[in-house]
Amino acid sequence: MARLSPYPSELRERAVRMVAEVRPNYPTEWAAMKAVAAKLGVKTPETVRTWVRKAEIDAGRRPGTTSQEAAEIKRLRAENAELKRANEILKAASAFFAAELDRPHKRS
Image (cartoon, rainbow, N blue to C red):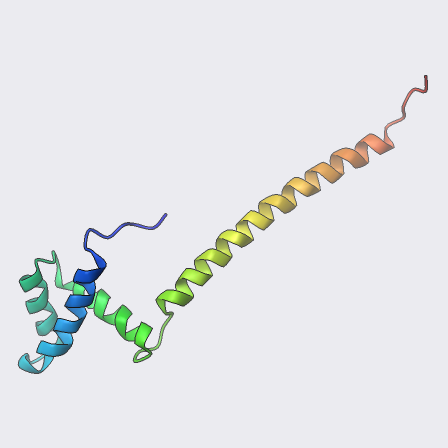
């Protein structure tokens, strides 16, 4: 089950924009992320770093699995698991009915 973020998506988007805007004012990207996290009240700068990296991947500026691809993979895995469960049920049912056919029956 996915965790719900305590931060609204608007805040995440704003943090990513702010890091891009203030980056030239700091010696490192990490320093910019720390400053933005402090200004926006985000618990840790690592959270902001994660948001920035995800935005870079989604924009195609960094290699990795995009949010859309990750959602599709998650959906396909769930579908695959459901199909496997259905397949097991069908196997059990076919074995049950095959055993019934092999069993001798009394004729009345």
